[in-house]
Amino acid sequence: MRDDELFSFEDARQRLGESFDPLPVPAIPPADPDLDRVVVELRRLRDASAALAMSEVELGDIADRLGEVASLLESRVAGPADRLETMWKGAGTRRSNPVSGPENPIAPPVDFVGCDDGSVMATVTLGPAYQGPPGCVHGGISALIIDHMMGLANHWGGRYGMTAHYELDYRSPTPLLQPLTFRCWVHEVDGRKTWTHGTIHAGDRLCVEARGLFLEASVPVPGQPGTRSTVADGSQ
Ligand SMILES: CCCCCCCC/C=C\CCCCCCCC(=O)SCCNC(=O)CCNC(=O)[C@H](O)C(C)(C)COP(=O)(O)OP(=O)(O)OC[C@H]1O[C@@H](n2cnc3c(N)ncnc32)[C@H](O)[C@@H]1OP(=O)(O)O
Image (cartoon, rainbow, N blue to C red; front, side, top):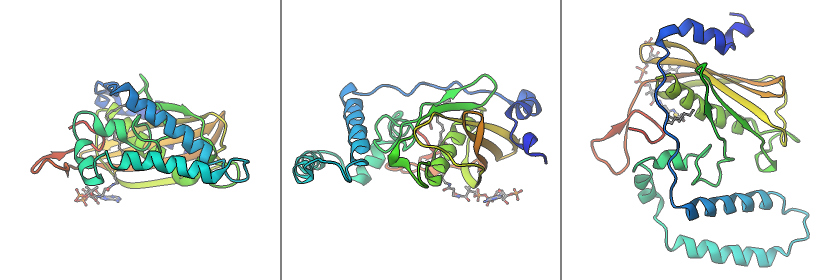
């Protein structure tokens, strides 16, 4: 198969024809605005702390003050096992996933758009916290974002499933501090199987190509005995 054929979502869309049946995609519902504000501040801290080395900051004082805030929070929030249960209420996992979740400080975050052609797109600029090679995005971060985004592209294309196989070709360095265009789309479907493709571009330059095989499956939902969910991101 030719490279341009493998990575042309327009071609895939034509071949899928009427089997492309988009699901309505609800926006991530807002929660307590102060909760989202806390996470925005945590992300500012994350980015600033990635630049602490060789700064002129009095680090002992900063560590003490952050320690106070962390202790204040730890004693008042749910433990991880309880948290896994509350995440499965409403759109909790969509709000807390590590790629786009407004409740997750490690999420860059990435904002996705479902396009009419069946692809899902995002433009994101990643900072030093996500560095792998010098000046470049860590390959695992690229993989994380595309894997998650393929799940959204499947949903957008009326499919669902867990990642069974996933492979990437890193074609050229993926720069930090420049807008990157991520795009994913359903390439082919057959019974329980969905093959989904994705790319990352910096401008016109192809940085990453990815292919995933997703299999329809369901997993038990934490805290809800006997309940299983087919979707890894909140909707049941
Ligand atoms: C625009 C905005 C849109 C907004 C939308 C909002 C809603 C949001 C919705 C959604 C977002 C979701 C975002 C999340 C994304 C994250 C994804 C992840 O991180 S998933 C976690 C990692 N993956 C696992 O942990 C799986 C672990 N593996 C398993 O549990 C099993 O292996 C499983 C269920 C995948 C398959 O197991 P079996 O027992 O059901 O299937 P068997 O019988 O083994 O295989 C069935 C067929 O598939 C092939 N197969 C299975 N594994 C394969 C593999 N690795 N490679 C190739 N073929 C494989 C087999 O050869 C077989 O093929 P033959 O039917 O014989 O033709």
